[in-house]
Length: 285
Image (tube, rainbow, N blue to C red; front, side, top):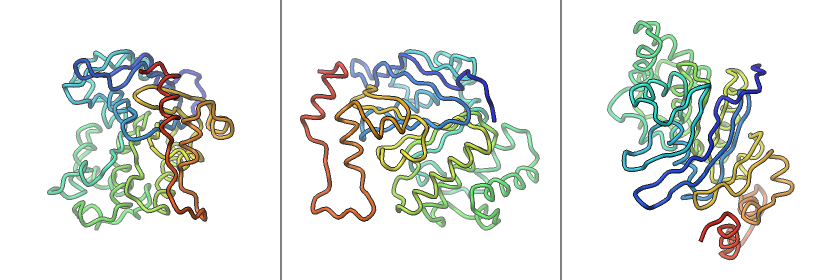
């Protein structure tokens, strides 16, 4: 296990905007190897924008400012070609929806083999063998039929495992997983999260886990960062925040999480007064 006290990723003062519209404001956090940071909040809170800014895949109309310091290098302002080269090789990214992220007309094997050959310089045969090893590592048994399949022929859980295999294929030091359990049933959600944490431990990765469901990711993270309206409203050790949240909004997120065996006539929601109070405390209007 890596023991350095230096974080793999240090984000400070990160803001993103389209023209005069601010999407993310003054976000800051650190992630170390062998640790998991969960970034949680409602849809539209700025989680995915933050992850995309770190990865360097923001749409051109969105401008990012601040600092994204990765393994000793400032990424914001780095030449686009160098930034793209880090994707896959140094920073892995698990996209929210595999059906959109994976090419519908290319076999899974083709999509896995190309980055292996590009980043690692493997021959086609070596890359195919490596792809089979990766599929086995993520629980797909190293079956050649997965390599020969198209994305629409796989189940949701299998697609997500393929995405994870591709994200770790070139040995990154940082893995960003953007809502990796979206549209999966509860059993598969738990399997995917356990897989990510196992890979973090085996590969000594720094893992950023993005989710709207604080209850779901709480048991799989070391630290939590809670976002609302593009701002960080609370952050700290997961156990402390779950047991004693400082923000009413964080408590509302915890209470809104579905629980096995809990029957309700109406799904829990977050009261508007809590949102207004959170916005005021975070410095919003």
